[in-house]
Image 1 (spheres, rainbow, N blue to C red):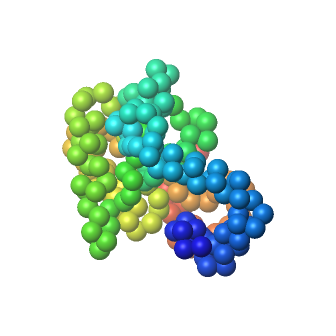
Image 2 (cartoon, one colour; image 1 turned 45 degrees about the vertical axis):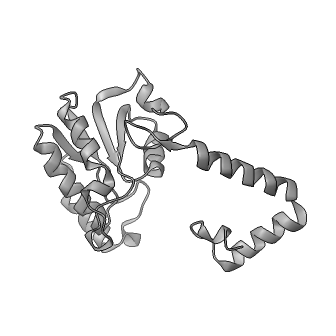
Length: 188
């Protein structure tokens, strides 16, 4: 049960239910789950170009000749990268920070791969870097740091928009999100 509790959102009761389910009703799937997890932990690594999770030294997106190598989207995690990919319209490459700046937690530029990002910026291939960090305090601080870094290499830095979601109603939007939407409004 303790092993299941390492997963996000799994508390003591859920862990207990999962463990008993596998032990009482589904031992074969439990063994398959264990084998799959063990294989994944041993074979999945970080892409040596974008730092996402990959079974190969360089991930399929970085190897694709159909991606725009002059456009780089910086995200905090592989799941953020997957969210952008699911959108289906972005055709550039990625850089996955594997975190965000958080000095109070001891997470500085070195821990989020800034040296590797600097190497990509210095190659002279990029025309734009899209900063797609989360709109948290740490995400905004990371975005500010990245913006300054990108601009110091004479590359255009942009930030994804934040605000009212499509189909959202103003009365249900929190004041911080609404303020952000107003400050980032577009001219029609």
